[in-house]
Image (cartoon, rainbow, N blue to C red; front, top):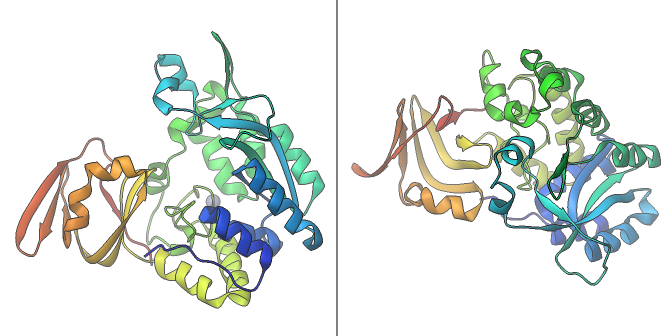
Length: 324
Ligand SMILES: [Zn+2]
C-alpha cells in the first residue's frame, strides 16, 4: 500500500517521481494546466536536473531561497516561537551549491508571472537572533489563490471566527479538524487531503468541508486528467482515497486496507502517514486487525484478543474518517 508510483511515459514526471514522489499528482496537475502553481522543497542539484528536463515542455522552475533542515526541537524552546512558527522550520543559509543538505523552496508553473507572484508572497516567519519578523496573514491567503485553492476554502480559513487577520496565528486553525467540524453529511473522497505529500492525493489544501463543491470539481478534473495519461496511477489514487483513515493529528494518520463499521475499523493491512518516530508510539496498530474508537481511548485487537489501549486527548484525536 502507498508504494511509490513511477510514470513510464513522460521523462519529467518519471524523474520527479524518482527524486521526490510526494507531490507527483500535483506535478501532473501543473502539466495538465489544472493547477497554476505548486511548491515543494528540493535538493539544489535535483532542482537543476528537473528544471533542465522541463525546459522543452513549457514547465518553469523558480525558487526563493536556500535553506537547511534543522532539529525541530531547537526552534521550539521559546514560547513565542512555538506560537509564531508553522510546520515548516528551517535555517536560511548563504548560497552554496556544494552543500548536499541544502534545499530550495521551489515553485513549478507554466506561467512566469505565477512564479514571480509566489516569490513575493511566500515568506516564513523569520527569526534573526532575538528579533522576529512575522509574515502578514494576508500574503498567506493571497498565496492560497496563487496555488489554485478554491476561493471558498481560502475564505473559510481567512475568516475563521474573524480571528485570522487580527492575530496572524493561522496555523492554529489550519487543521483537518476545522474541516471535520464544518462538514455536514457524507465525506467525498475527492476532498480527502490526508495522504497529502504521500504520492496518492488530489488536493494540497484543507478544503472548507469534506464535501466542498469547488474542491470536488477541482479534484475530479485532476483525477480525470491523470487517468487520461496514466490510468493505473489514477485508479490507485481513487482506491487509496476511499480507504478508512484514523487521524491523531494532521501529521499522524493511519490508512487501512479494510472497512468501517460504526466505531470499529477491521483491517488486513495498514500504513502510517507521518514521521517514523511517531509510528513507534502507535506500533501496536500495525500488529492488530481491528481498532475500536471510544471517546477518550482506542482499543487495538488481534482476533478476539486485546493488544493495547491508547488514551486520546482533545476532541479530535483518534477520529475515524470515512470517505465515499
Ligand atoms: Zn471550499
